[in-house]
Amino acid sequence: MVERTGLILIGAPGSGKGTQAKKLKDQLGFAHISTGDLLRAAVAAGSKLGLDAKGYMDAGGLVPDALVIDLLREALTEPAAAKGFILDGFPRTIPQAEALDAAVRIDRVIDLQVPFDLIEERITGRRMSPSGHVYHVKYSPPKIEGTCDVTGEKLYQRSDDTPEKVRARLEKFDAETRPVIARYQSRRIVVAVDGVGDPEAVFTRIMAVL
Ligand code: AMP
Image (cartoon, rainbow, N blue to C red):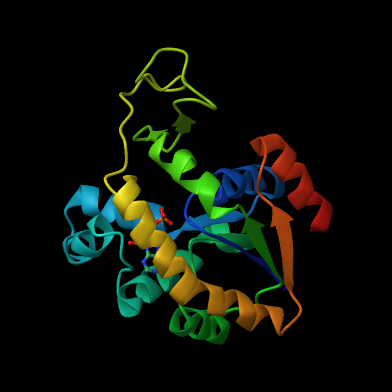
């Protein structure tokens, strides 16, 4: 059997992980697994997982490891992940990384670096369509304000994309996720990529290091 490729896109909230993961998925044909997207879908569906996760997400905190680890394990078994997978927003803590390493091989970790002072503007200007297209009011606005170019759906702002919650999320990143990067650095599989600039330029940088 051909071994599948495991990639992690790691970086602070607003570093562009989701945007780049979608591009990588299109380019490589791998599954894009975003625990944030899976959790938001669970919240929207009103499932038990969604109800359990909502409070943590609304506060800009992290959802308990046990919940996200179960979610990830399930996503990895999907047929789309057979060739390869791109993890976006997982692992965010050392216990999550340990659970991941016990389940699959990780080949490369892309550490998407964006200075914190650019992040608040990126996140607070972000607007989403229910089908997953992402815009920015200043940098990549839709043609008609508040409306998705692709689907015509009404855009919304994530409830955790406010300045106060962004600060809480960045604190979590420093405290919980930086040690995860260090864990993979000791294995020499981390490549740092400059995440500043337009998404196409960042994507070219990522492809150059893969
Ligand atoms: P994201 O879309 O990746 O920014 O995730 C949105 C929110 O979902 C985060 O702020 C967390 O509350 C929660 N979340 C997503 N992935 C994880 C994870 N791996 N561990 C814990 N919480 C997570």
